[in-house]
Image (cartoon, rainbow over all chains, first blue to last red):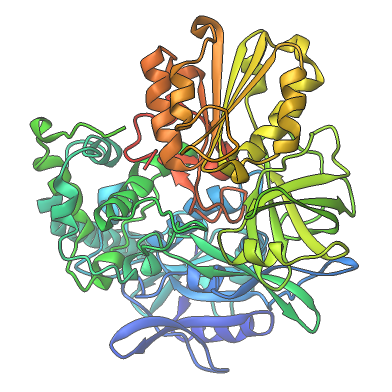
Length: 348
Length: 271
């Protein structure tokens, strides 16, 4: 672990710009989003996760998954690799969740695998929390533990820099004016980590549930509570689009001068027409069914299929919801308002 | 290995008009596409889009696919406009296919509705190839009108096969039709297969699958021996894009034929 002064981060960004398109947090209209860093600008520090998930760079909408001509498959365009500042633990956890489906799987999503291999992550400790943050409810903590190349932990006068990969080790070794971190600096960082952890735990105390989330959701599959939970949902899809683990996509092919390309766009299971078939049939015609499916997928079927809950507790869906639907509250209500007598008989 | 997102070009060799709304496209892909009965491919009408279809031809002929298509949406309308000589794209095969290992020594009750007989025909060819593997194949088929019966020219041939019986029904009486009239579920109710050693396989519209399933359960079929070709919007074919789920199952990789026991507890699995 090394220590570097505050200006060292600007130098790191300039060093990365030689090999990467560098993205860093920037405040736009009151929200922190990822923007391409102008040459020479130092990246801003973000206390907590950004409004925008990392998937906006890793799973960019409109990306080309394959390209071909009558002669056969052609190598598609390969974007310059990206280096990203400002990633927090919930973002990194989301990357590992998506890896299960898109990379560690018989069929791979080529653009995701390419991005995972080539993009570089400069993560950071959370030095604050949004009111919506709930990583601790899902077993997380507000500092990165893996999946980063470098991790920055602010301390008096600068940052502790931890390497998490061979690339990161190399960059850390190249940092000018860096020196080994002292035990006091590490202790100060760890104290601050604990403070943020306590804050996130405290703000979520009221939503604490006893059962694991999969049991809570599954035992409600046939109850009427979903209509109550979805009462203010306006089907805007913001929760899915802001979610760092939602990855449903729409495929289509397009002719270009260089041949045909297969393109993927972000999609959302809250659309009434999301699963519509030719001829007009659509499963989950009712909003409450789609709402339930969103929870079922994240907390029951994804863990069953992939061994991990498809939620990193980032709280973006809470902030994004114009109907003020709070996932923590929903999970809490699913547990506390569950009434066996309300379980419905199914039609089939 | 070629990317599974890239289609294999296929030449359209012949168009067979099956009914006023159903055509069979005989395709010669640039390379053979080996598939198991019940697996599906994404068939692409260039410039329009792709849609999932299970080939209706024999899995023994991977170099020549037949795909039978009901005109029902914008991709299928574009396919129906194609003339022999056109080039289409094929991705796949995807999915698991029919669980033929369960059919060994069994009486197989095959229940189709409308264009639902198309995927089942690939299974029938597989079974007909070696009728020693099963005890019997009983085919029950329903369509709205005599004109809408698919593969009508083959029905008599199938009836001639040892161990095979074939019965078709239409929804309402029609001039020149002297066969059974009524829904295919009524044929199911009258089946004489030995339920203790039978499997049922069904493909058709969702509402038909629901009523067929109820009828089979009434007759005493255990859910473990009912196999349904489920209807969902399958796009990527690989369990990535997310839209074809029935509970935890992605139809495109776990199906499209599902054992009823696996889906019976999932709310609204059958609509």
